[in-house]
Length: 143
Image (cartoon, rainbow, N blue to C red; front, top):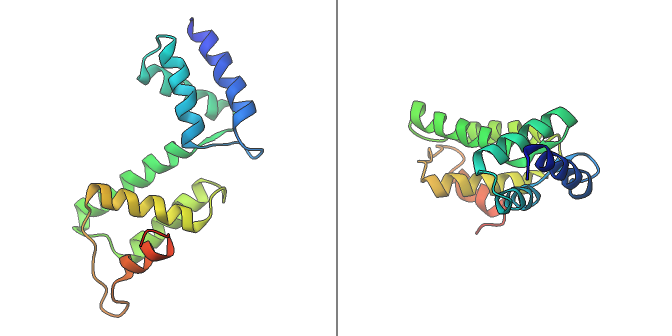
């Protein structure tokens, strides 16, 4: 199928799958990409096409915001050695604003905690607030 056909299919999926406020979550994105893959379009081209269409039509891809959050976490870990509570809360706010309040803070904290755990980023222990990361994981429903 030509790239124009994939674009039309992506637009149709966006209109039917995305929430009323234009939010395209990771599961909807995965479905669109798998459809394009089954038609012989590469992952990179499919993803770039989907990202371009979302930007052109005002849709928001959850994975794009998460990619930016992952990047911020990796930069923090590389530059400062450890993730602090303040940095975690700042990134939570960044994602919350980036997703235009489409997900609640609990879901965002869950995603960020999963990224931190997956990449095994070191956590800074706070002197006064104790095990802040354990508290964040508990609030996110991970403990």
